[in-house]
Image (cartoon, rainbow, N blue to C red; front, side, top):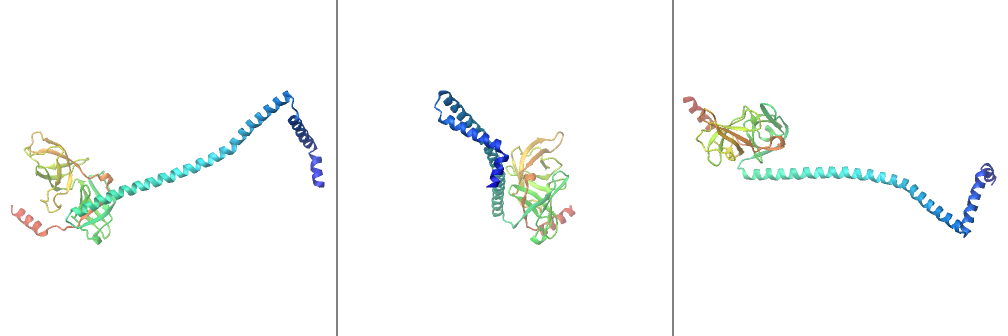
Length: 277
């Protein structure tokens, strides 16, 4: 009790002021005079405005917190959408690869591309399957959209494949519609070439080009690409035929290696006959 008296004594001016304000408000509330009623109305309005202004402060902090939560939720949802989109694309690729595996009469070894070069004269890919998986050099590499290249080196768990976009790559190819045969080659850029096509041969833009099967390296009927240009070479005996590859090498992620060995008897016979000539 003594402590309370001490507090009142120390702050007596404020206590007196508070009592006077309370008494004034009480008198105003009991007074029915017209002027007093007007003052009372203005006072109530002012108090309402002040309450609205003060109530904004807690709302501001609540909205700020809610905004942070919504931003975090947006990030989480964006991440989930990205993962779902990637899973959908992977599912589509796997379905296409599975369909390819069912169509071809060869044993196919699936592999992921773990490294590649696309801006050199001798472009290659590295895949995560090797001799332990039954892969050996010269085996063809394909994907669901067509011919990729062939294996040139292996270790137990990895292999290096030479792309068709490589100056050292060669393959026997033919135009599916007219059955015209030429040699597939590459000299740089985004397009392949079909060489040794006569000016008289029936090749036009839009023709589908596939492997011919005449060489010992690649099986027949593997899609290579679409003829983008076919024109006579000036002063020459051949056509200039350019092919847009069906494989998008920049987006290449999964491949199949055709686990088929080269027919050694055929190769030996052809080499022997070639030497006699």
